[in-house]
Amino acid sequence: MEALLQHIKKFYPLGQDAQEALYNCFTQKQLPKNELLLQHDNTCRHLYFVEKGALRGFYNLDGKEITHWFGFENDFVTSFHSFITQTPAVENIQLLESCTLWSIAKDDLTTLLNQHQEIERLLRIAYEKYYIRLEERFVNAQFKTAAERYENLLTQTPHILERVPLGCVASYLGISQETLSRIRSRL
Amino acid sequence: MEALLQHIKKFYPLGQDAQEALYNCFTQKQLPKNELLLQHDNTCRHLYFVEKGALRGFYNLDGKEITHWFGFENDFVTSFHSFITQTPAVENIQLLESCTLWSIAKDDLTTLLNQHQEIERLLRIAYEKYYIRLEERFVNAQFKTAAERYENLLTQTPHILERVPLGCVASYLGISQETLSRIRSRL
DNA sequence: GCTGTTTTTTGACAAAAGTCAAAAAGCCAA
DNA sequence: TTGGCTTTTTGACTTTTGTCAAAAAACAGC
Image (cartoon, rainbow over all chains, first blue to last red; front, side, top):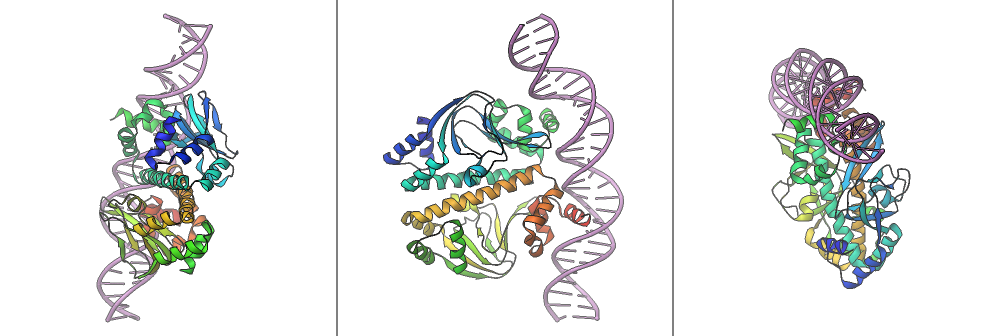
């Protein structure tokens, strides 16, 4: 829990009251590798903070698993579309390593937002950061070549390569596993 | 201004106080076609609401203009990265048609956020919606073919095709103008 | 209605990336 | 260490998309 409070401070520092309220709404979960945190067609009712471990969001396309994001230490993860709209998810969330997570239910978060303006602000600022991050990924996906995307990954998030099978990385970069393998061999 | 207040209501309905405060912070701008609202390397200090007209965000890549978003009636537009971080923008914002815009300065928005919790909430909810929208575009860009992306555009945002030169649409879809032309001819 | 400009289309070719199948390498547990 | 699995790489070929150049069409101003 200390990690969560520390991490939140970087977005927007909360007062004692808000911190305690947050504290009371999050519960710890220890889950083993490969566990499915969310299955598609179910509505995602929780937001998770990753204290330790790695996980991914993926969905099926023509029988293939497409990984479209990873979560590691200090990331907030959920199926955003499903969590925000409370409609069934298209994606699955799966643990790539055994994890220590902190989970908060949508309803509890809503209550927190009503009771603590500071938490509303925290969330707004968090969205700003996540929006910018997604925008960068979008520009990468749309306007860069496969090799450039891989090089970006190497410089910006090399830990992904160390902790995740290349098959997942390939779909994360939007390329086939074979192409990724060839790019790696000629660098 | 009526359009702005009406539009905001769809995100989160504001009380009288907050509405008036908003009202006082936005100023109207009438600008002619082709005007540059923002030039790259300048910091974007305003958020705009489009009452009437069309505009685009674009940047230069190897001497080519890459359009990465459009704004039309009832859109909020700005260079999000620059506006949020108050650092120089990589992109330009240009009017594709003459426009009626409502503009608010970053500082005034910050003040509003401090004075009206409702507006903080409104903004948080707006970010949620914009985040989801961007996520969909990202998945499209990364995992769909050029033809599929064009068909999506046709069904989901056909107004873009009616109001914007195909050259801009092509880069918006992440394909060359020639490829777009060929896709269109064989549908 | 004509001219000059911009936008869009077409053609020939090149480059990038995908597919399918098989081989190689890594990993794990008996 | 030795099979039996999974993951990664390699090879041959196909498909998709990009590039460059030129033609055709659309548009604006006179």
